[in-house]
Image (cartoon, rainbow, N blue to C red; front, top):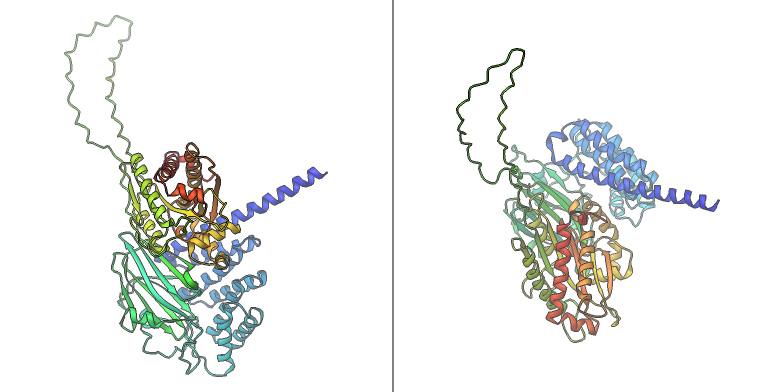
Amino acid sequence: MWKRLNLVMGLMFALLLSAGDVCLESWQAADAEYQKFLADKSKTKYHSNWEKMAWKFERIGLNYPDCSKADDALLRTGKIWMQCYQVSRARADLDEALSAFGELVKRFPQSSLADDALLARGEIYLGRGEKDSAKMEFEKLAAQYPSGDCAPAAVKYLNQLGAGEDSGFSSELSPKGTAAQKAPLRPNDAIALMLGKSETVSTAAGGTTVSSAAAELLQIRYWSAPSYTRVVLDLNRKIAFTLPRLLQPDPSLGTPARIYFDLPGAKLSPDFRSQFEYKDNCYELPIGDGLLRRARAGQYQPEVVRVVLDLQSIGDFQTLSLPGENGTWRIVLDTFGAKPAQPVPGPQTPQPSPQPVPVPSPTPSPTPQPGLTPMPAPKPTPTPTPAPAPQKPKPPVIIIDPGHGGKDPGAIGKKKYKEKDLALDIAKYLEAELRKKYPDSKIYLTRRDDRFIPLEERTAKANAIEADLADEQNGVFISIHCNASPDRNAYGIETYYLDNTTDRAALKLAAQENFVSEEVMEQAGADINRILADLTTNSKVSQSIPLAESIQKNLVGQLDDTYSSIKNLGVKKAPFWVLTGARLPCVLIETGFISNSVEEKRLASSSYQKAVAKGIAEGVDKWLKNPKARLIP
């Protein structure tokens, strides 16, 4: 009886896990298709395509209520119907959006997205001029989710509606034939004019002062390569931002293709205004690298900053947001150029033209005998066409990242050895070992001397190289570090791949390497999960786990042959920022504890550093040469 019960429970548990996997896979597939759909103007102009896209996400939300992506799917469904309305101007599409947002609130009242759904419902009603319905949604939001990130916006709407004045909301949601009142233009509304129609709301009449509680945009930075550009926005604190939208060029307005998104509840800081040229009523950062023409930012509304990237030629883009140092926040947008089509394999060298073969003089045929059938002449054997020589596989591209550097020493041992110096030494030995194995390969170091490089720049360098890889060409990103612990007896070697975790020790280590507190790491869990969900669609990134396994196994084996008391701490997962957003198989290796006196001494010796490098190189080599090893175990 108990065996049967255990079997039934086990099957039920397996089914639940399977359903979760199916849900996540369905979300990832639908999201990838959605991004491609938005970028294809030939598809977005047909209503039926919008319907199919909305249905894909609605099915996920309704069929998998226990999945972590169910509420996201219903929110996406509503947003797709709103986007569809921009094309169709059909009231029925807004009704569909209201229904999807309503389902989210009804089915997932505890979701962090429920207040987003209520806010969207209120704004739809407001755009229609149905103020009583809008007020009801905003009141519900303010009462049920007072600490939600949408509550301030709901309160602001309620104040405006309660004043009995015309709200002056500017919206694209007004039905055809209804005059939507525009927000009063201000001198810094140039970006709004360039983009055409407004999607955000104005403040109450006379309220043009930005709240002191608003987040501040501190600066915009970028790193560029021929096929890849990373743009980073630095803010003084965490802030929500709207989904980036890709707009096609408009010849009638003279506007290029562009990506834009809004930062509600934000203002431009004085430092930001002083850094960039003020041109056409907005602040401009010229880029001109073949992918992006420039980045622009302006105070689109008193408490809304709009960011616009003018495009020249891109194939894809992705966004992520992560905590920065000292409580700051970063929004990262990666743009990728379209990869050129790979040439069709053919013969390596032209084959010589066939020469005529001399034919011998015919011999007289024997006279056929009566009653016998003459034998046919034998057919000449055709000359076989030589098969084209197989193309030689392209050599791998390997990026080695020595951790820390410059003003950031990393961990410091009892004998005052610094992690930044030891990591650089090991990285250079690793480069030499890999060149022995792959003399034709391209090997890059993110730094070759003692200089500080931000974490997001290290990943940007890797992505820039990945963007130029051929379809069948392998690339690897390896970050070298030394561990540290308050417990001086702690020792051992471990290899990490990117993933979220609840392991306290792994989170603590990631916090140290990410320059943030453990509390911030825990709070960033939801953001990390969203990033990881996007990255799992990239098959190259999924190869990080077997790569970590191969490196850890061979590194420990190499050191075990020469040194005593080598402790294998295994392969682990943690959310390291330096790996986040990388589109290559990537790992972070903690080569030993610099806080342990024995391992600090070893890490400082060239013989140990060479042994570490040899073990890592062996692990990379075995992973590259064995296609099966590149599959998730």
